[in-house]
Amino acid sequence: MSTGLRYDFDGFSDEGYTSPRIAADFRLAQNTRLSATAGLFYQAPRITDRAANESNADLGWEELTHFSIGIEHFLSSRWTVVAEGYYRLLDDLIIESDAVTGEAGNSGDGVSYGLDVVLNGTFGRGWRANLAYSYNDTELNDNDGAGDYPSDNNFEHLLSLGVNWEINDRWQVGARWSYNSGRPFDDFVIHDDVLSDLGGPTRYSREFTTNNTVRGSSFNTLDIRVDYRVPLGTFDFVAFLDVLNVTGSTTTDELEFDPASGILYEEEGDVFPFIGLILEKSW
Image (cartoon, rainbow, N blue to C red):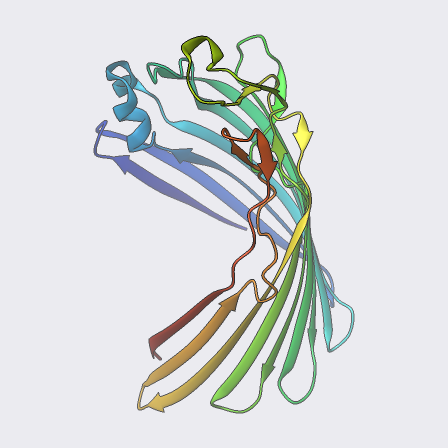
């Protein structure tokens, strides 16, 4: 069992918070280990929230209370499975009460819970693989009478498969495929010819009628990375090529609205190649 304290300080408000943490591990059997964690987490108001309105200078910190329990089991010398469930209480969330003036307050709260499962495999000749699944449900409440609603980034289901091959001491290549279920978004109605009374051009408008009641389409991506490592004494010089979204899939479930035509459309996916250099020090 281990315990600890974390101290956070915000220079804008001259406020600091101390948050306790506790963790415990228990070996249930030779090849099975249980773990549990609990703790408090604090988040200072963002600069953009403070600057939106003069009254926001008195915004308080957001608070998260976290509980989790997990299990790790060695299926064999090659396979390991890890599962962890968690539950979080969200308090004093910053909610924008007036979109025109930017005035906000700490009136929001909510709950978040989920499950993460990872299957790891180690094979001969430098091959490794893992399969990961995550489920999450986050429900928020602004306490304005509208009730609970899903958070903006509540994907609910995430699935990924990764493969890594250490060809030799210098070359390494890896790939990861990911699947994301759609995120919630607001339902809406489209109004046509909204500038007719003003004698302007034909334009359409979108009026949102609900809060995160519709779920977008799922999407998937494939990323590939190649590393080349050169030892330089106690340092390692690593050159890499990282190609994100190799297949050019649409990487978002959000629809773009064109006010000139009143049409909703999906943006085409792009391939993002990155070339970089890393200098690593071994201690």
